[in-house]
Length: 173
Image (cartoon, rainbow, N blue to C red; front, top):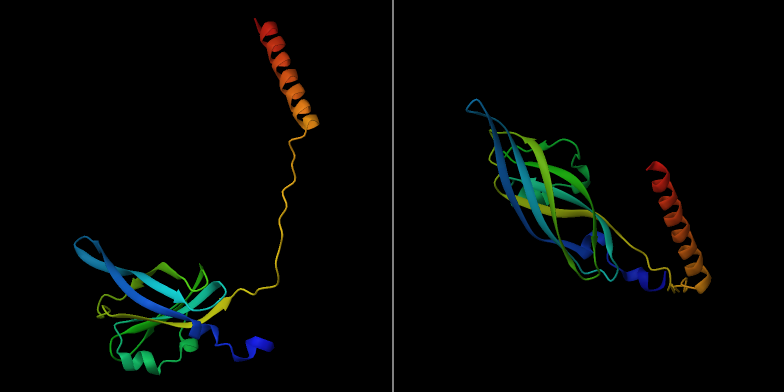
């Protein structure tokens, strides 16, 4: 275990800096049919290795108490969970690479949201994430492939193709 014994869990090393939502309402024959949300979330990492995946709990139109009291692992991924205070929540997994001690902006869309609910406040929390592991150093050596034999063979192949093309054109005339 060594130095990893006192390491923080991954979900404490990644945090949501900002979450913003934009809604689009689709209209058919003058009546709204459904709504779609496009979320922009800025994630930052304090980990010393890269983050490769993040699972978020996203809350739309809920109170801060609801966000605090909800266990993120219990949120559904495909459907929305509706709360009594007119908000909803869902869980979303993102395959994203966040560099060590870096930031990344992610965008996600959620379709078929209800029209009758007020969903304008957005909050996001990190439920879990995955970190890369350091396994050792690697050395990459590039071999010089530009030897004179290789160049001679390529030149002869090009010459042979040109002669064959000339003979073919002469025969076609």
